[in-house]
Image 1 (cartoon, one colour):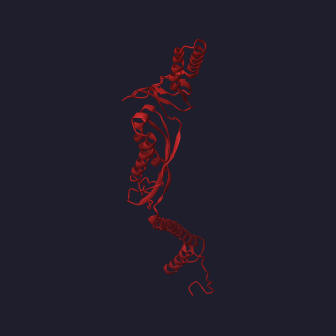
Image 2: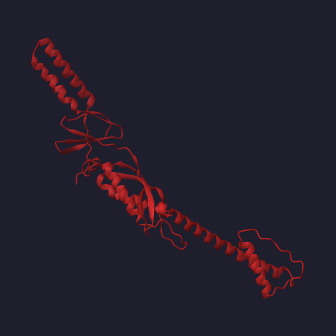
Image 3: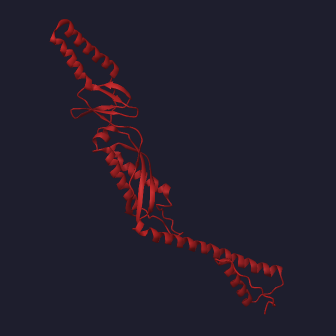
Amino acid sequence: MEKEKNVSAFNGYFILLAVLVLIAGGIAGIALTNKVAFITLDVLAVFLLPGFFIVQPNGSKVLVLFGSYKGTVRANGFYWANPFYSKQSISLRARNFDSERVKVNDKVGNPILINVILVWRVKDTFKAAFEVDHYEEFVRVQTDAAVRKLAGSYPYDNFDDDQSEITLRSGMDEVNTALEDEITERLAMAGIEVMEARIGYLAYAEEIAQAMLKRQQATAIVAARFKIVEGAVGMVEMAIEELDKKTDIQLDADKKAAMVSNLMVVLCGDKEATPVVNTGTLYN
């Protein structure tokens, strides 16, 4: 497979000076001698004009002669080359691509909205010019395909703490690395270098967004309740042990059960408890 080859072109200023000399010589020759033959100098000058071209900083010109690739000029400046060369401009600057939000299904079938932010640039001008049609459109389509494949490889989220599977929402570093590798592989044939690829937007599709929000809230509530109950049990256990150690109060099983019940209600309730003062004895 042919690859890019860098070539140099003639300094454009020297050739421009020669063109001006030819034009001046042709005009002066006709004026002084009245010989039409001097017009050939002007014709030659006009023939040389299409050979001039400018390469902007971080730009390039791909030179092709009658379907044969002759090389790429990368150095910026004012140049001249064979007037029969066709000259295709290809920018070497880094570019941003913010893809459209696409609706796809994640690994477990939930519809989600996702888009990707891609930073890329042309690395091989021969591949960009001749291996694919319209390399910019190629970047767009292949990036979209890579995003769809990535979304189908991971679930959006895990709702159980004991699940350690990488998800789109929680495993951003791993997911972005996988996305960058996938896009790099797809764009290599077009001579494109992927500088960075990451997920820019991620959300459930509108039709299930409310249901998934309620599920997330329920999961959070259950997790919070679990921690509250766990802490309350430890506090009740500590309270009973401290009463046994530091007081002479002897509680039978029924009284311990009543105290545990009251403490659990106080510690686990959503609202502040209303105390009831017992003015009698412990057993009345």
